[in-house]
Picture 1 (cartoon, rainbow, N blue to C red):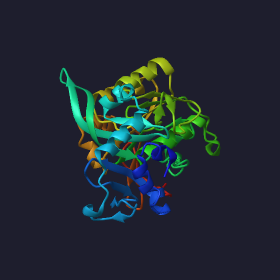
Picture 2: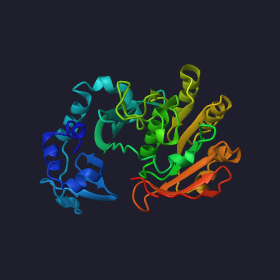
Picture 3: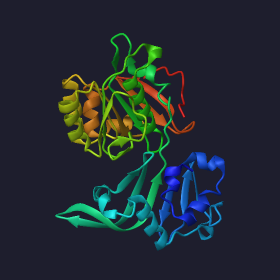
Length: 324
């Protein structure tokens, strides 16, 4: 188990994870801790409950049930015993910790003038294990570089949840920013608008993940506003954003393109037909704003590249099919 995760677990639960096998440990994706409900783990596309002695079981009755004391200790460990300093993170519903790991939280929502102000009585945690994969973008890089003009294709990565789109996006940023000697591609100024703190995994503004030598990050900033801020203040050559889909995202991408900035983004979906049905993204497709579409799945493991399409939505032959 990664040290950053062990550090935020109560001693009792930490001991359980010390007993799990190396194979499960290395493939852990999520830890679901819910007060008075069975402790659950998700790993390698499987799910199981964890028993008090660290064994996996499919029977909820045999699992360990986290207590109020456990959830209280987790909150204190995450916040370093100062929950008030996490006010903004609580309002967003997740906290990013060292290592870029993201902890989703659920409890009683506090409203102020109809908007979420904070969350209290926290009773559920979803600890999502961040796993950098240096070189994850190697199979797709040749298809998103315009070698003759030394440019980057405007690219949309389409993927269902937990199929590796953020891992892929992160490594694309790293390679484009630092330069790719294999293709004689010099590094570009990259701006990441990291609305959910998942790409760079910033803690106190400092990225915990490798996102390249010429990369600037706006952490926890709404995508549309962040893209405009980046263009005005940091003059990026390439903008990278995760999970577009709102009309304001559409307008910001068009503004970026009009300013001569290339855009690489992701969107939820299992196929190109899924995203075509979404009005805001459909208009971008019709205008041929994106010249590359990368469609991911888990059919042959996380990071399966199902298809790569051009701006006319015609398939491009892909040599390597899995990057994980």
